[in-house]
Length: 145
Image (cartoon, rainbow, N blue to C red; front, side, top):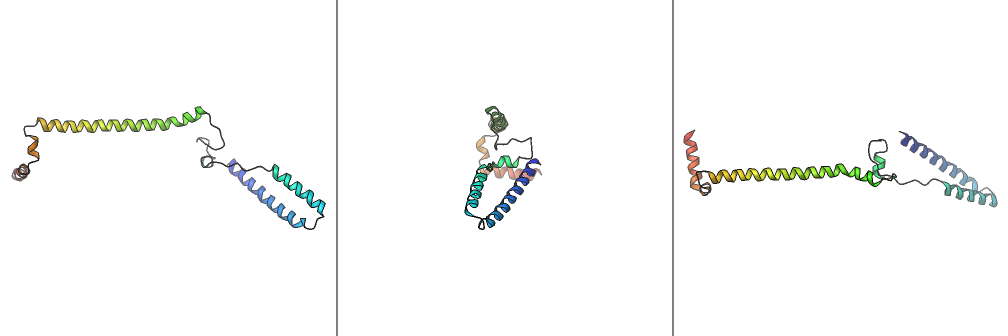
């Protein structure tokens, strides 16, 4: 909330400054030369002392209202902070790799069980590719039901 209040205050100050500038510029034409030169010098001095807006990254703008999130804006994070921020990402990547390895092993074991069942069966594996055997199974399945 304080950030939005500060932003609103800064906007109001900028608007007021623009209004004052417009009125001063209108009245400058009627002033003598020496006074207008002093005013020009004072304006240049005031502009040089004006705060320059600091560019903020999108992450700091998105998380400016929350203290629980990391910001990468104007803060300077130490190496330890950056490493601590990267640890969850590394843990996620390691978990995904472990899941992939386990799934590959499970699939290989399932295929090995199927191959072992085919090779240890009384029926030779070539019989499964014979179209006549497939027709025989279909006919016998119809008779059994």
